[in-house]
Each structure stands twice: as structure tokens, then as C-alpha cells.
Amino acid sequence: MDQDKITIKVEHAGVGKRLDIFLSETHPSLSSRSHIKKLIDEGRVLLNEASAKPHHKLKTGDIIIVDLIREKSAGTVAAENIPLDVRHEDEYLLVVNKPAGMSSHPAPGVNTGTLVNALLYHCKKLSSIDANERPGIVHRLDKDTSGLMVVAKDNDTHRLLAKQFKERTIKKKYVAFVEGSVELDSSVIELPIGRHPSHRQKLTVRFSESRDAITEYKVIRRFTQPLLTAKETLKKQEGAGFKNCTMLELTPKTGRMHQLRVHLSYIGHPILGDAVYGKKSDFISRQALHAAMLGFTHPATKKYLEFNAELPADMKKLQDFLLATK
Image (cartoon, rainbow, N blue to C red):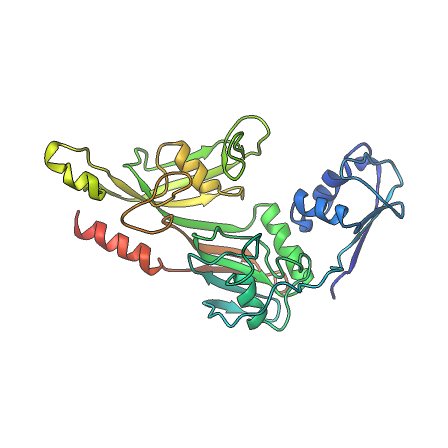
């Protein structure tokens, strides 16, 4: 049965900690510091029966109450009859294969055509932990990244799945095509990521105001034939340089926004077609990145489940082209 409120009494270990940090450490199901800040700003976190600021320092015996009932309705998010590629569904959750071009949830300027719009039509109920904007959404994929996502139907399932993500016990593997010939057959990229200092909509590798980020990669195949743009094709007779391509399996050990795209761009191998962290491509109209495997422990049955999704049509077409012209 869903728990509508969380009540916590601060013991010795929490003394002196910020309210938002304490909540994120004590209840990983509260998803993120930004989510907690939103709850606090909406007056849904009370400290000793009064509102508080995220940076409030805690004392022994403080009583924190977190109201998990969404006061506002989903209102502006409409159910839409959009086809879904459902790979698994039961009374607690479903696993969907999201297509490229579909946003995971509504955002400023995007209220229709999202996965949430489709889910509201498909499901009788979804978790309401962030119901105003993201009912059911435990994690997200970028709009132009395709692949597997797990969606929660109730709040208990949502919290337990979020806990697995926070504790990094969820298994995820991606497939990407990147520019250039990656030298090492396998390696680990361990570089912190933060907001770009001048382009606030982008992230970048930086060593201050950042969070740790770890990506493992393994080469699936190297393609050494030229990938030429239209202009480069005209210059081919003049000795224009060839562009190689590598197919990678990526395993993120942390879940930072844009992590794979930022890490690969930083080491000089941006994902093919990534217009933000690399450049547009004549060979694919979006970043060639696909969430191909997702594994987790089912919150209700406690059984480990693993799902795989084949390459979508545009990435399969790219792969076939590369194989045919090798």
C-alpha cells in the first residue's frame, strides 16, 4: 500500500547536515536533490511542523514530514493515443522501448507527443510521486536517444526502482556509433561532469561544481572506410582526409544527464549525429545512441529481470551501410 507521507526523526548521524542532503541520503527514493528542493519549495516538506529551506541545518530530535501527495493535478498533461512498444507489463510496472524523437516527459514548450502522454492513455494508473509533470517516470532518456525505459505504476514501485538507480544496482548497456577509430578495445572514462560555464543548456567535463561520472566502453567493431559529407565527397580527389567510425557498447556506472554524449565528445569521439556535443551527420538524423539493455530487480517479486532491444531502423540502416562499404 502506498505511503502518502514520510516521517523522520533526526538522530545523531543527521545532526548538522543540510535538510536536502539529509533527505537524499536517508530516502534515495526521493530521486534527486532537485526533486527534494521542489518538494520543499511547494511546502510539502515540514520541519517541526513548519516550512524550511533546503539548506537548513538539522538538530537532534528534529521531526521531518514529507508529503508525497501531489496537491496539483496533472491537468496540462493530456492522455494521447500514441502507440507504445511495450516489452513487459504487469500490475506494478512496464518496460517500454522508446523511439528516437519522443521526449520522455513534458517540458517547457513540449506538452504533447511525449512518453508520458502515451502512458496516460495506455495505463489505468501511474505513480504520482512527480505526477504534475512526470507520472510514472523513474528515469529518462534524451529525446533523440532510443531504447529501454522502466515505468512505475504505483509509488512504492517507483521508490524502490529509484533506490536501485541511486544505489547503481540497475544494469544498463547502450550501443553507439562514434566518430573516429577508438584506439583501445575497452576502457573506462572517469571524469566529473557539470554545467557548462557559458552554455547553460549544455554539460561538460569540469573539475569544480561537478559530480562524479563513470562510463565503461568496449569496441564492438571498427569501420575504417570513409564517412564523407557532401562537400568532402567533392574534395575526395584532392586528398581529403577519411573519417572512420567505431561501434561501441557503453556501460554507464553513474547516471548523469548527457553523460555518455559528454564523455565521448571529451575523448575526441563524439557520437555520430550529435549536433550538441559533436556535429550533424549526413548518415543519421540524430545521435546514434540506443539503450539496448536494461536489467533490474522487480520491486514486488524480487526477481531479476533483463530486457534487450534490437537496434532501431535508422541505426540498423547505418550499420548495414557501414558493413556494405567496408
